[in-house]
Image (cartoon, rainbow, N blue to C red; front, side, top):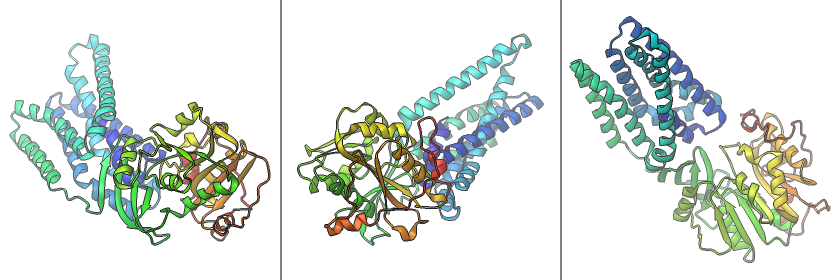
Length: 475
């Protein structure tokens, strides 16, 4: 279980965390364990000897060393050469997680055979094997989630699993005087430590760390849309936020569309931001609107700490209040009222957390708004074609709740099939609003409104929200 849990974290920076990744990972591990159960039972029946158990742990340990040695280079190769999240998930899971899982699976039937002494107590013996196996899985799950991941790096945890796998093999080899296998085991451990000590760090990263929720990286780069020099915060595979290193007030073009709140609700004084990351827009908001307050909901406290350390976030500002929890649970229980709700949350590169996309979640946001308030949501999709399916469903979900819903596309109507930043603007009021402005900057944003957006998808609900499926159909 520890191997499976850290496996998802190993894949996240390169492939993401969509349900395709989890499906491939869990599916291949379950299939590999089944193969291991079959082979382990077959081997131990031929020769009921503890030697086979030593071989299984020995094979598992070396399979993990193989993962330890190739994981970074192989996953970089996947990113560069395999197009599409589905094939990338399948290939990565097959290559990295199948061999060790087969060896781990072979252990259970071997243990059952070796401790089965009395045929009259077969049921009790097998029950004990399954019981202790399940208890071990539960311990591994909680131990990994609550202690290992927050405390150690993925490489350190993987090293711990390797050593833990070698220990029973070494004990068995010493008992049976299999000095050759014993020597190879120690050589394997030495090789692992040598690779760890001599691991070359990627100097392009100013920071690289694991949190409870994310693999966090910070680095400098050039924005390919604006050619601006920016500092990036990357969460998993996704560029989650940034900060301009020049004089540009906002790091990304889509953030300028959040300024449309000035047009649709000129008197706003309170806002809620779902998703903090590098806090690019909250910092701008507090500077641009000195009389306004903002609450920010960011699930990962480590992300906020990184924003403080690298992105000039000032948490001492009395007009800024930060809440570290899931955005859906926050809007479920919050009693505060807002004039504007900005939503900039992502589960991976183009998919939103499904619990924020549904009609039920949208109703909660509607209830949090003052009269005349609005919600603005950043969605990475195309305006038409297969790459627009999730956007269609989300637009329909907002139309189920809000009396007026508008769509703005950063690349404009001329590039409708291009995956781009699109901004959904939902108004609580049914009072007609002008869709042009005497303000040149505001009018340059309003002119990007999509006027002929066709919806063929049904609304999303908590009971049925295939967000990842729809979002990746056009990829």
